[in-house]
Length: 446
View 1 (tube, one colour):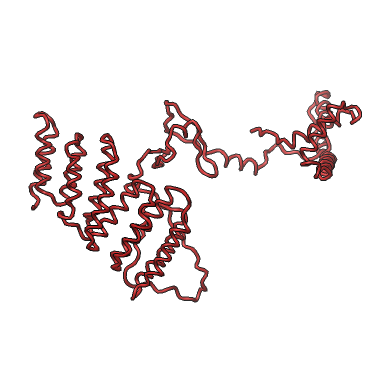
View 2 (cartoon, rainbow, N blue to C red):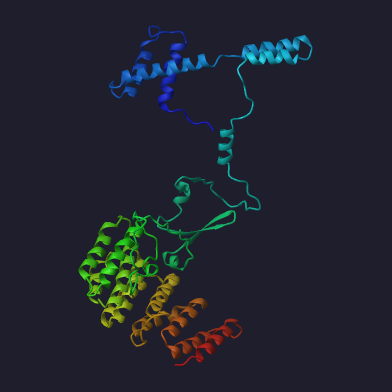
């Protein structure tokens, strides 16, 4: 592959060619001299490094002359040898040939093994049974930093669009996804490498702490920059809270350190950092009975979460923790804030509406842990019911019924299932589906 010659080399070649053509500076007209002086000025950066530049040119010329002396031209001798062989009409005498070859420098027709090996490494292995797309496409190659999408393609994609990348045999498949889909994915997680602690071999490792421990999978829903350092700081804060008596001020100093030292002035990363800290604090509040920290989260952190999805799930978690800490009024405040976010969606964004309600209901009614009573969830049910009449898709109707069941509104779920069934035509196959749902709901205790 030919590479364009750097500008410095071009200028150098132009100067050498002028001198090799047999002319001298006296033969040059004023315009050519002016151009040469301009080139030297540019190379010397204001005439400050002209002597250094000239010395470099002289050294390069000497090196080239030296290489020419070390590599004599043997082409003429070889041609004479071939002519003698052809002119004689006889087969060459092996002894004479060997004597002549001894006088010539050794030549090798074999390619350089290192270059050949390098070229093989540069060529990817051939693939078979692959798909050649017929649609409009772009050619991209992997570089040291990853993949760079062509500008025309980047202009078609929203700058904050999330993708799920799947490696399937000979295909790399990009799926456009919503931010709220990310926790549902089976994400690839790089195995953490064990770092050397720098301790002496004979020194005993630190004894494992007894009692509650951090639950990192609950806090880190998404990857962060400096995640290891964030985790180390939060771990130290956790065990400050766990002491007897707890040293809350020291633990909160470490939390504040995380919120100030690891911000990157990047909307998504900073929102994820704040979400991680909120989930961490909510767990600590429940474990160590520190309800006053809810006010700190509300005052200092929650409104700084810029991602709408992360803002919602943080409000959901704060509502649940407030219920656990017997602060129902505070919990309802967080639920109302979450509902305001949901109300901003258009009716044609029913996917986002139902997914938001689903996350709220599932947070407040966990499979493990204390479930919030249906009386306390009445505000959620009332708002969810307001969307029931707008649900035309069967899947959304089923999701609505499942949420009513999960909140323990069994009778209401049965009545709604009957209502959805009766709206269908007599020959609709979905009538049997609703009939099955009604049978399942009807067998549940009220």
